[in-house]
Structure formats: structure tokens, C-alpha cells
Image (cartoon, rainbow over all chains, first blue to last red):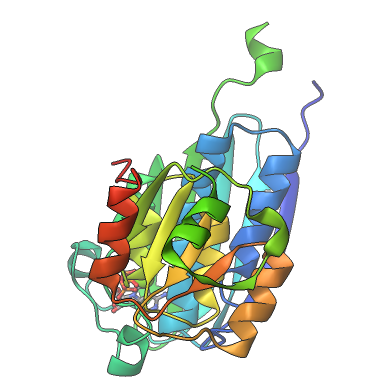
Length: 149
Length: 114
Ligand SMILES: Nc1ncnc2c1ncn2[C@@H]1O[C@H](COP(=O)(O)OP(=O)(O)OP(=O)(O)O)[C@@H](O)[C@H]1O
Ligand SMILES: [Mg+2]
């Protein structure tokens, strides 16, 4: 197999609950078409969805960058928004600052960041209060059939 | 068990995705918290919830769920129905309370895969 980098970029709108999740559906679709294992794809979909939804729920707007590298998947979600003052606190399961109207829709369980952590090999968050947040996730791809032969 | 059989047994109203009702239901999951469903539902689950907004379709698609049952007389938003149609996710409704839906599913042999 030739070594090449496949990458895609998508926009995410804050508070656009109608289209929320579509970017992650695209990521999932791409992976399915490329023949990744369905269980692996579902795990990546969780991480991607939670990062996408955090932009929709908490930020103004953002982008999702998805790249398939030789042995890793890389997802970088970058937003313009309030930022996260205390990342360790935000990582705790159950911690959420989601406002009531968002909680009523079933968001705000404080499980998104822990879900990302569980479904990635590396999760790196950097944030500047008042400017925005960058979430970078690396996920090692399972050995492909071609390689194991 | 096929989704069609569940629809018949529980007298569910089918809102969309008529074509995919022959899908095999492997288990069930109940929650109104979307991140909880993302984390803990399993492929092939039927999902019982009272959330009717369009994002439930995204969750069901991403997790490969067999279908969504809106309990307690909840109705999906128009956009939810549209999106479920696009994504071919069966969207079912009932006036039965969530507890009753789950009890009946369990009696039919649909249980948690977790
Ligand atoms: N992109 C972001 N911009 C600003 N704040 C964020 C961002 N992502 C997360 N946070 C903060 O971290 C908290 C925890 O995030 P997490 O995704 O774990 O939970 P949640 O989004 O509140 O709820 P859930 O993901 O379960 O629906 C959020 O409530 C919010 O305060
Ligand atoms: Mg979240």
C-alpha cells in the first residue's frame, strides 16, 4: 500500500442543533468506505461526536480536521468560544457548565470529555479563556488486513 | 427479534424508515442523556427515550442502533423525522410510559447487551 495522507476539513456551527452530528457522520462514512473494522469505527465516532457537540453546545463556531496517517487517525477540533478555565476539572465525569436549555435536550451529563479520553490513545486539550479551545485526538489504527498478510 | 415484531407487539406508531423494519434487534438501552447513550449503548440496540430533537438521529446513526422508540406520548420534531428518513433510522412512537415500554421489551426477550 502506498503511503499517503488522507485529510478532510469541516466547519461546525455553534448552537446549530439541527445539523449537529453531521460532521461526525461524515467521518464515520469515510472510515466505513475505507473498510475499517466496524467496532473501531464506532469508537472513533464517539470521540468525534463528543468533540463536535462540545463546539455546538459551548462555543461559537469551529472546525474539525480529520486525517488518516499511516498508523494513526488524527482529529483536531478547534473552536472560537469561551475557552475552558480549568481543564482538569472539565475532564471530571459529571462536571458540566451546560445551561438549562441545553440540559433539557439531554446534553450536559459531563460525559463528553471522558468519552473522548476512553476512545482515543492521546487526548490533548489546550484552551485560552475568551478565545477558544483546541482538542487534538490521536487514535492508533488496528493492524489492517493488508499489513498482517 | 425483528424490529417489525416489536412494533406489532407494542403497537408502536412508525414515523419513518419503513424500509428497515426487518432489522434484527439485539438488545435495548434507555436514557435521555445523549453522551450516556453514546458511551453505553451497543450496536443493534433499540433505544427508548423521551428526547425528540434531531440530534437523537445522529446518536442512533453513529452507534448503529436498530431504532428509536419515543415513549410517554412524546412526538419527534419535524426535522427529526426528516433526518431519520435521510439516515434510514426507524423512529417509533408510543403513548406508553418508558417503564412500561421497557417492561414489555424485556418480556419479549429484549434485554441489555451490557
Ligand atoms: N469546546 C469547549 N469550549 C468551552 N468549554 C468547553 C468545551 N468543551 C468542554 N467545555 C467545558 O467542559 C465541560 C465538560 O465537557 P463535557 O463534554 O465532558 O461535558 P458536557 O459537554 O457539559 O456534557 P455532555 O458532553 O455529557 O453532553 C463543559 O460543560 C464545558 O464547561
Ligand atoms: Mg460535551
